[in-house]
Image (cartoon, rainbow, N blue to C red; front, side):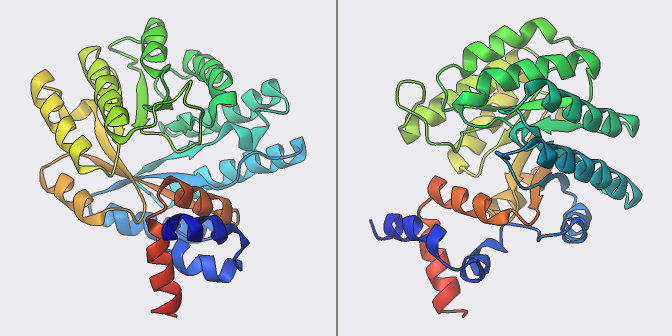
Length: 303
């Protein structure tokens, strides 16, 4: 209860206080910060996916600015020889304002990444965006079969059917590439599983479907039982190490991350940066209120 109350209060606290907690999970506000963290992760044998924070924009001028920012990010990442790709949220490019303009912006970004032989991951947002983002992914996949992927969320009851419905654009030469995560948005019980064990059960069911059908999953979890479940499925289906990777958020469960790397599995870390870090931080807290105790320690113990 205490943690939940603190979590509710966080959005009303001064940003400088929240930053004490947030800097552990965010590279910083600038591309220089993201490059620095990415280089450190690369040195430890970890790939990255870089994300400029900011979503649910209010006008199309912001969408154009975000597109230009991503094009500049790609140039910088390639120049610095970072081993990484890119993640983006369609609402940052006007998905809910004008879906055709959004598609044109994101297509330009994917084309830029593809020109370097690189890859863009389309993040899945809350349920009003799901069908729009599936449609967007289909169109991008048609034009860039090996340079675009999607996020799917195990807690949504529709996800296994979505995986099946997308099979028509899958082939062994151009496999579907998904980041499979639990899901962080607050959704109604009618469309989303709510219980911990239930979500985990469907996460592993989705993952098994991907392995059984030759998809490429990014296994995005910090939950040790899910990591152990993934190991069992990897053994069951004799999955090549070139056909999957584990993924984690920057700053979260570093010891578990090390143990996965020690077993010889590929690891990619999500590196968010940007001036819009506050919304990302508060969303992480809503996902895991137990982080509130970490904030209290950071503010009152480390000052």
